[in-house]
Length: 472
Image (cartoon, rainbow, N blue to C red; front, side, top):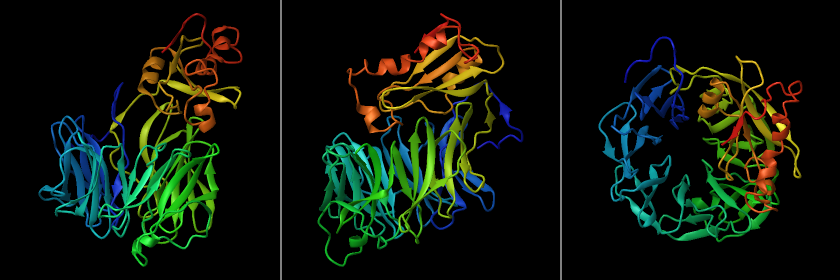
């Protein structure tokens, strides 16, 4: 790996996007991450305490996925150009690569779960469907599940006694709970209320006060550690996203004090102690983070800059790592404590424009449009509408290379959300009263006449002069 230059260079384009590092469960200063190696993605280690790191993989087509276990063995997925392969390991401090688990067929990665006790579960997707296998690093794996249905391994309980497999959130098998011998413990349906599994609590479940019981399921044998296993879930109900938990004896219990009006996901804080969860909400094109204390039933905002948080993860030392961006700033890895994170790009991309919002009233509330305009040229500008391909998506306050290329060429760019976009809640996303396509058009066409009128320059100084514009 070439040493980084002393001074950041400037270039007019870039394809690098940071990802969050994975911290060691024992030593939070030790991290592994996917970084840039001469234009390829490769796996790197970094010790924040010593300021040292190394490139762990060096493959012609790059390496994308990595993890680190309790013994600080680094896991990485050795895939071919078609995406098929298997997991391998190498010690954090160096040494030979080794096959992670014998007896697992090659395929596409479909989940990896590691426990402190050394038990490992992997999901592999092949031509015959999904296979889930369990074993110990360096040993021979045992098949737990083979299915032709769509699915991904979500997690493995800390004691190794339960596995969670996620299916489509709207399906009859949204979540399947299995024992290592393949016995089905519970199936959570999402046909009436979409349901997502978000991972097991890192320690046996605390004695949470009863909430709203919504689905009873059979329990494992009495006295087993898995009787107290706590699975975090998110369930869509009555137009909101409700955080909840599942235990073998009590089923799914939603937390009425912790619900959101738009798409939200969550992760456990690692380590023993209080049951705390980090939540990330996508709302109206921007992101918000919260910490939920399940024991105290408290929801606390986590301060982040205005913009979009593309990913967020609580670290073992209590810090929060996140990827932040806005319309004119490229994504970068940040931490709540201000501590440096590895894998930052050494390139600085120019900022061509300035950003602002426009809100358009609608039958279910206002919808935003993000407008980026050239900062170095007088208005009016030719205007380009970028309409995202949704509906399971939304334009957000985030850096977009196409926007920067257009703004750098003198165009104003409007990114418009419409009926069906995420970020506004289930009702907005699914209400197609005029049919697919027809319902959406008025949503994003509504602002256009005033922009193209040429008479609103005083009110919207970035407005374009008709008819200089395009829709794409």
